[in-house]
Image 1 (spheres, rainbow, N blue to C red):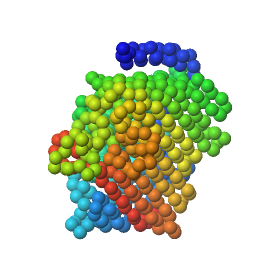
Image 2: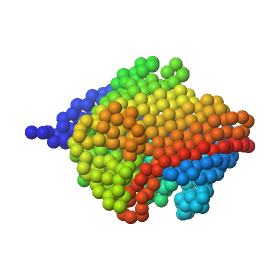
Image 3: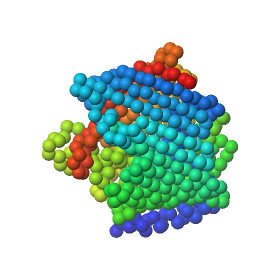
Image 4: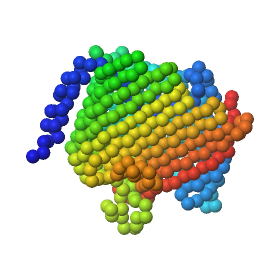
Length: 435
């Protein structure tokens, strides 16, 4: 007879928690875009920067080429950074309608506006990489840019006072998307306890989580910090996760690196990090349509992904690697391997590189619905999102700026919403005018 998940949780959590409380404190968890090097516009915090970047070139959206023009404004003066971006497209059939078809497009000019003074952090802009808690048991790599033309402008906030940290976010300043918060308390013996809550009132989905992590072993170079986490979606499923982090902060004053290994035990109707990178196009209502499906007669077989209501009991293994060198290089790799009959493995890759004033590039890749490690080498499938940006300085103020996106577009205004893959590519010439 199979042991109920709640009994299993009680039997395994209690001794782990007791052990952790006697030990020592976890590092700060990833929270949204706070650690994104691409949003730290100055190479040094004491270096203010101001620039206007007009740009023009070509744009391929779906099957049609268009002319593209726009601007970018960068402003940085520690502790504040601001970037505004506008882009408009014109083709043989006229302008591209989603550029200017609603007042919300004015808000979409905000790429990010942020203020980070350590104890106080505030950011406004499309959400990226939002994680609630140390391992993202409920909210993991959540973003609001999967459907690029319908991206929403959200906010994230973090306040620290003494041993208490409060994090909060919303995917839309109009409060129409996912919102959540977390309270983290540093306990004696270098231990941290946190509790989080996330909800999507439009789709009647909400959940909570609790997490404990401690620095079990710390030397001058390495820290080992085990963790345990429990999460539950109300009226749905629950999950237990545990594992550990091995990290070196500012090793030899050159780089920081961390390796995380963990395991998840999930009940029915629970998917770890369900508020994730593709949640805006794949949730209890919206679904992604498979490539090649008959759009006039859609059936469940034509829809990608596993709905939360249909998720089976599962076991998953997590591997996460994070490497940072100064303010010019960052690599993050997240792979959660699913063991079961359903295709629910998940990959996230983030890369950023900056070399002086000559080259800057960033890559963001999200793949859901994978079956195993070998499937990572397949071409991008239906549950994939890709964003690539590069800026190369040719000479003086002349630059080449390139963007490529593997995004989604709304199939129709019918309910429930259905989304199709949309490919975008924009090579642009730009002038960087500093003032």
